[in-house]
Image (cartoon, rainbow, N blue to C red; front, side):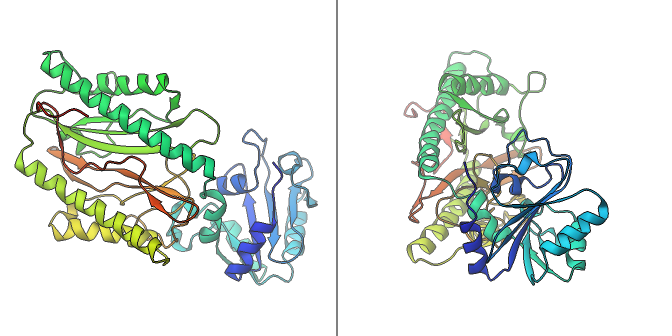
Length: 401
């Protein structure tokens, strides 16, 4: 597919930036590879740069022995070989420019947007050019999904929810039939269902009883796992996408309890994160209805305030959510004012998770996670409805999902 440079230039003009300098060395800037549609198997051992001015013609700068990776870009080519020619050609290409955007984040405030090494930033600045972050404009080209991708993500979320409910039924049946069932058994059943439905994942799902779930990224293995018995909290966090190219991930977390009645303290604690999740979702929904911008850190704050006000803030030890694209952790806006301060604006045509959790070391871990899909028209949707509002009492007669 031919790379179109006009949208990049339009974004630059809207942001009042003179040019975009996309730099890479040996695949360090995956954002540039995505935006420039560099083949994933391209043999890149030398530095390349593509300079896209807000006005005028783009230019690519490649090593004289390595023109192949950017050969698909039908723009003027400049080449270098020696270190002096590298300096000369970059100096010439940036002549007359005042401000350039690069995949850089001041003080590394947004790590997913920070791909260019400090030395290269220093070099560009030494030429009298001001370097600003491309974080805001880059997500337009790395995180906004097509209509087909958005529709596919919604379908996948529904399939994933059904598979997770099947996993809870598997736990219920095993316990009622007095059969031993482990976290690993449930994990493998989920993977089997993925395979049956043409779904793939980048790593095995999390299935964790209460104390294990207190470590947010715990996952069972063949050699390390626990038996799921009666009167236990069980957390399942799974993510997958369709095996078709360019499909988008779904990522959900549900919590069940292997008893007839959920303990009051567990139910009360879970309700705190449900209310936090709902506050975050409401924040996004209301801003889009009012056609007002909403930033990643604000969504995190809306959720975290609820948890803090309930006295459990110290047990909520991660951001509220992350960008979702063809990667489970995409390069777009994270719902985060805790691990980082994400000042990027949520855009139509994107997907992200909202997943607050409370973790008491060696005792209990609880999390609720939904995916939010914002249509290209700006409608905020949750494809995995209905939302979980209470811990699932897996052994109750009336429970059947």
